[in-house]
Structures are given as C-alpha cells and as structure tokens.
Image 1 (cartoon, one colour):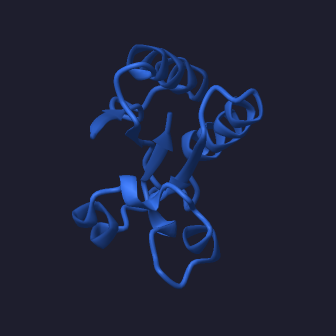
Image 2: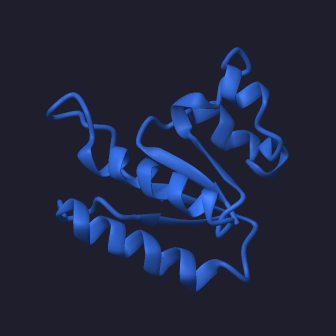
Length: 108
C-alpha cells in the first residue's frame, strides 16, 4: 500500500489538499487503496488538515472519484463505520492493529 504524508513540513490546509489531489491523481489507476498521513492534531487537539481532507474525500466520494475511505482511529471491530466498511479486507492486518489516528485509508 502506498502512503503519502501530506502534513510533513506543516503546510497550509490548502497546500495539503493540493498534495492530496495530486497524490490521488498519480495513483488512481495503479492502486486499490492508499494511506494518507494527515496528523491528528496533537498540538491543538484537532487537525485542521485531517478535517479538510475528510471534507474533500466526501466530495470525491460523491463524485465517484473514490469508492470510500476510513480513518485510522476507526479501524476497530467495535466501530460502527468499520463494521460496515465493505473494503476492510484491502487494509493489511498490521495496519488494523496500529489504528493510527493521523492516517486515512482511501479506496480508489
């Protein structure tokens, strides 16, 4: 699974979204699932980048550009979204065990 850290170097939210769009365009035809590292807001409690990425992914999902996504902190068998996530078999077991709060897994 390919991964891209879009919060490295503390970019603006707009720059991070640009990096997300470029990354997805680059991998759309070659990958089934990718990981995007957004950070989880350890310094301020919430991650502006993560929230903006989720908003962008909702737009892309509505446009059918991506199939679905799930946040790392939702990779829990007791989580309702995880239970209903039909692509969970695409996520490697070692990733499921980590439950990275600062990662989002995107199904292309």
